[in-house]
Image 1 (spheres, rainbow, N blue to C red):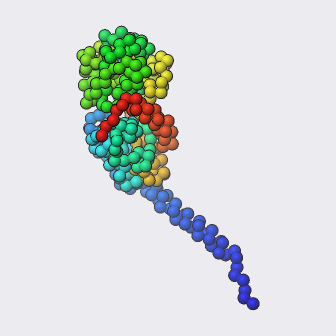
Image 2: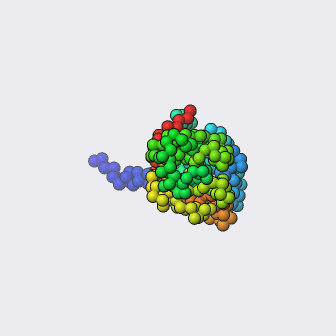
Image 3: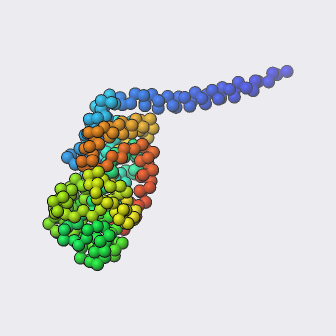
Length: 335
């Protein structure tokens, strides 16, 4: 009589094999996160040196390096509204040693503006943390007969085809918000794009344009000197740099377009291990919580908004359709 083979050992061996396979799959991830960072970390800034993004990146790098046990360096890679530098990071090894500090345009709105992008944010990048939000000030030339946002909207409605608004680039928030105001009021306002915020503000001071959205850093002194009138701030909250200035929401203009703010945020290549993303997020938040960093961010006219990857992803998902609609309303398209 042929003995029957035992039934249980193969099943037990199968379970053990599965467990071993699972452990083997997890071991490299755990080892990678424990040894991270194993070399200098590079923060790519997809804009020219000297701007707010560059200044903030260098401040964060200075604070993060000692805690991470590695040098954190900043590399400027400007070009094509942030596309060149962002693409470099999207194609970098997914090990957390190359990350990008970008703006809402390079990480979000460019995908609606450009017919062809060399990267896809959802496919090629992992969101790490927002760093700061950048509400903008709705400002007008003193000749404009309006002292708040509602009076401005009424004036716009009465002045069809007669007013112009500035922006620091096609598809930037000042362009999209101005186009939204013009559309709501059926005002046919003219859009005047500039090659930066400073020349836009200079033309506003000269009265060559009547309306603009600008940073507190650029316009606060002019408002205090009576050379410009500040009517409102975008976003849901007042800003520390100009705490007496009400939001557009407070003034009853609750369109989604006015609740948005630009932001500065960090992303890494897609496929970066989750523990590494979490370590980066933790270090960024710790740096942002230091008093001198907070003070510098506020002085720039921004508000600190360091977040977890999950919190950043929720903000991104919520804002995505709003930005898409605003770009469509503006009619902006770039190649």
